[in-house]
Length: 201
Image 1 (tube, rainbow, N blue to C red):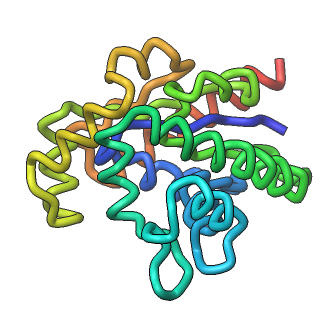
Image 2 (cartoon, rainbow, N blue to C red; image 1 turned 180 degrees about the horizontal axis):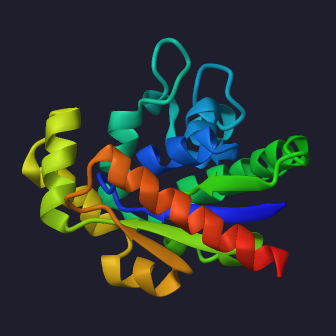
């Protein structure tokens, strides 16, 4: 089994690349989806989050108020660390469980937006694939997709690792700038063929 860590800044096209890898037979473990499930009503993280941050961050249905929490962690680095101390061990256990269920797959892709920032993922994967785009492109994509303001997108980008840091941590980079979907798929396929050939040597 080849374990690929997939990462990229917001609006880079990482999720599109993840879908293309799945189409080629990879199992996908999405850490963002795991984090969301942990903070839904009855999610494993909700009790510890309420104890740490207060019931006012729990919505009426029992889910995390994600918008309020996002504002808090953007403004307070210590709050971000406390939230991560709750979520990261639970996400890690869920990833291990899902990877164990995918033992029959040749490739398992771990989609980890904060792979570089966490510092722990490099040792858990065989290769790191970074999807990269210019900041201007990231901003235009997210503003069009999510309806966010430029300031909101810039705030997220500022919280993430720099493009340079991600590229430095990468075994391969797909520069997703000016590519249509067919061209992006060709980049993904070429990289997979190269890695599979290298593993057969």
